[in-house]
Each structure stands twice: as structure tokens, then as C-alpha cells.
Image (tube, rainbow, N blue to C red; front, side, top):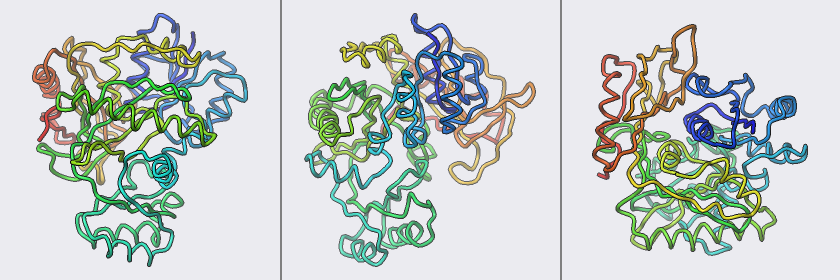
Length: 416
């Protein structure tokens, strides 16, 4: 089969790698792809949210399946348009992708169906939002309601920080329409983790849990980022807690979406936290998470294309997982998550039997591969122990030590 992967980041590079291993796939295309993906797929210069252009390409190339990586085309209804044209596509409809597109919708859904989450209120009125912060105190969390490229969440450790966040969203319109409404919720303390699941209506097939490291620097110091690395599986998370998450979060939310007339199809991402009061939901995303995808999919033994076909047919894909540990460390541009330069040449990236390289923010400039984003690439490894995987990753990353243009953490894979 001919498969089109929509997107240009690390998640999409990992999808391409996995699809290339499939006995059912003859050719992989990526739109728009990146400098790493172009070695493993045919890249086409179409933006990931240019839906009519993607649809025209899929028709002209007789693409058998399209797999959508990022959230924006899902929120814009790419799945609806492809299905209306009779094309097979993997991902939720616009109506179901609201689970990521509106935090207010999702909080109300969880409240209605008694899915464990933080207490909250939603505001469009600035004065009422400020009064709620004064009443509740800090720490407290302020979130833009809509899609804000992962940047619309402020974990305020003092009240002033929360007041500033509300003003930036509701008065200064820092996130445009996405921040025209804010969700303010209680701060939850505990260990965070992510759990993806393949979902088709009420059928839920969980993957293995993973954890990403959000802080920029070693020891979980520095500003929050989109993720500086991830690891899977999690030895500190009991089977009982994983089962609770599946039975009390994933299955009920899939059933709730069916009951709301928004049946979910695709990968559902649950961002969770293990608190003193049990596991609670921080957020849902309507697609695979980045960078967790880069450590979860390498441990999946199944043929990914076969899993997707079985899901669509309403069959159990019987997920199987490799024994061992996957660790992935992100190489970022100096200055990230603040201001950073792009167009910086990367050192030569050699093939290594002990590790794998996943491109995220890269592009080709003549014969050179240069940076094209804050998170540039991820180096991962699958080994028998976390220590061996971390060692393999850190050994490979030494090629970046000659340059002060990039930085990375050396401690991904262990809790602090």
C-alpha cells in the first residue's frame, strides 16, 4: 500500500520509520516532512494544514491510507474531508478532535461522566477570573481554552503569576482566539505520565505508559518546554494504577464521546498525574504525543499498518510489546524554549547500531542539514535496562559537545 504521513516533526519521523517496517506498505510519502524523513520517505511540499492540497495529492497518487500526526489539521477537519471523498484516513473527526481543541469542552465532559480530574472553572470575564484566583489562592493553573501550540498553560506558583497569565490571555490576546476563554483549575501534585491508546468508538487498546521530562535542564531545572526527552515503560507505576487508568479514564471517555455523538477514532493521548488521591487527568490530546511517541513505538512489536487496518475493521489488534527500555533525549537549539536561532548546521549524524536518530526541527540547506526549530532532533535507544539505554544515548550525543549552538539533558530516563 501507499501511505501518506501528514506532518513534519519527530512524531511523524517515528511514524515513517515504523511504517517502513510494515510488510503491508510499499511506499511512504510525507507532507511536508523534514531533513531526516526525506531519507526514508518521499517528501512533498504541502503544509500539514493545507487540507484541499493534501486531498488532491492523495487522490492523484492513489494513496491507500493517510495518517495524521499534528493536531491543527485534525481540528480543521482533515478526517471529515478525506472520508467524504471516500479516502481511508487515520485520526479523529473535527467533532471528536475537540477533546484537544477545547479544554472547557473536555473539563465539562469529564465532570459530566465522572472522570477524575482537577476542579476547575471557565472564564471569559477578566474580573471574575481574578476574583476566582484570589478565592482559590496559589499554586493554581491557568490554561487557554483552545489550541496554542503547547504554550497555553501556566502553572502559577504565586497568585500574581496567575493574574498576569489571565491578563495576557483575556486582555492582551497573547494566544488570539485560543485564549479568548480561560480554564482555571486546581494545581495537582504528583508524578506525571502519559498513556496512549488506539481507539475506535468504544473499543480501547492501551499502549504502554511513558513519561516525558518537561524542564529544560538536568535535575528538572529551568523553564518548561514541549519535552526534552522521554522514557518507557515506567517501573514506578503499578499494574493496578495502569488498570485504573484504562478502566476509569480511557474506556469511560471513549464511551462518553460516543454518547455525545462525537465517536472517537485514532490515537487518544491521556496526560495523567498520580496524586495522593489517585490518578487524575491533566489533559487529553487527539493524537500521538511528542516526544513520547519516539520511545513508545520502538517498543511496539506489531506491524503498525496492520494495527490501523484491524482497528478500522473493529478488530482487536492484539498489541504486543518488546521487553526492555526505550530512552530518547532531545537536542534543542540554544535559547529554547525562549528565542533561538535556526539555520545552524548539524554535525554529521552517523548510523549507530546502539541508537536511533529522529529528526524534528531540521531542513536541508544544499548539502547540509540545518536546524529549523527549537527541538531539533531526538536520539533514542532500546536496551535491556534503563541505564544501558541512557548510556547509549549519551555516548551518541557527544558529537554535539563541540558546539555551543545546541544543548541537551544527560539525565533523561530517571526520576528526580
